[in-house]
Length: 300
Image (cartoon, rainbow, N blue to C red):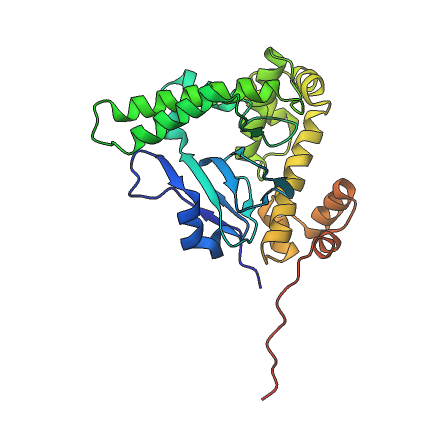
């Protein structure tokens, strides 16, 4: 039977909170872990070149051809496709590494690379991405020289520039859906960040409006403008996503999942899930390929 979704923390020995890893080498050592859905408490930027045809992130399969950058937010549930080998590099980092100031935190939480409301950000690396490749090469080189003066600030600045360039390229790609800037976007982003922290406990629009120091009507106007949804719909969507993650990627009973998501009674959770997902939790599990391991026989 599947265990709970495993959460990986940043390596304790990587004290800077930043690493550039060889995905092929890591995949060769930890294939069994990396091909099972998992989540982390750090951000990923995956530069995938070949050997792998898909990467799965929250039930979306992303085709890798020929060279792609994937930006994966912390806490997303993702896994590599089970293939023989993987080719590419990975940038992994913590908030604490990137955010040396409030401005840094605001940039990270608003950057389209990790905060594309419509879909996970994927950047096709073409021959035209010269500046992006140059910054990546500088960052890779700097990472190999931890004893250099101003090592961490230099890496942080390079990562900042890499994200700025990536966002510019993303916005030029034909499949990128641009969202309006302004206070509505700021409120919607702040609302989503709060929701990711409190969704299992706080489900009322009033709580989030109070935290943002605005009225419920103002929050409604913001999310309708940016997302085409009411704040209540956004809350429900977040709960359904987490429920789907737990239903398919863990062996937790539906009753336990309902309590984990803050539903006092499993019947309330079942009704909520069916109303928002179209199936009961058990039906959704079966439809998405979840199969519990058979019980051990009691025969002698």
